[in-house]
Length: 136
Image 1 (cartoon, rainbow, N blue to C red):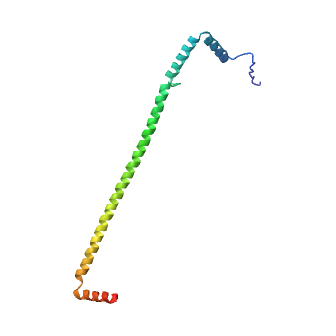
Image 2: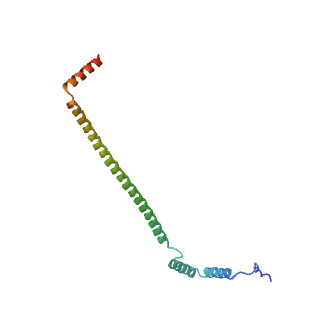
Image 3: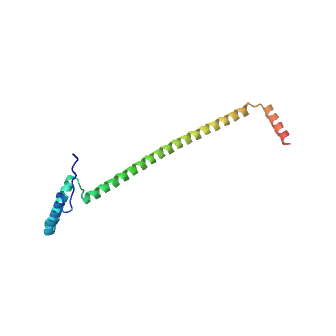
């Protein structure tokens, strides 16, 4: 047997449609009770967590904005800390390089002085003679 198809005629309303029509008619007849019913229904939705109160929505949005701002501040602080650490390392390396350059200069000076002291007066005279010969 083929399954029966349910056809709906335009004249008949479904139960849900009938219920809506009945609720609308009651609301028209007694608007104060309808408003009270709406308020009670909203409160039920709030309690269930189905809906949120407007002030709760605003508080939630503020909370999200604060969390986002805190995340941004934390990342900026981390970036600043890293840049300061890098600067400190660069300064330390520069000071080591300067100290090394001072040591190298001191060693060169000591070597030159030792070379001057080790030269005999005769070799100095020969150097002066060679320099004067080169000048002329």
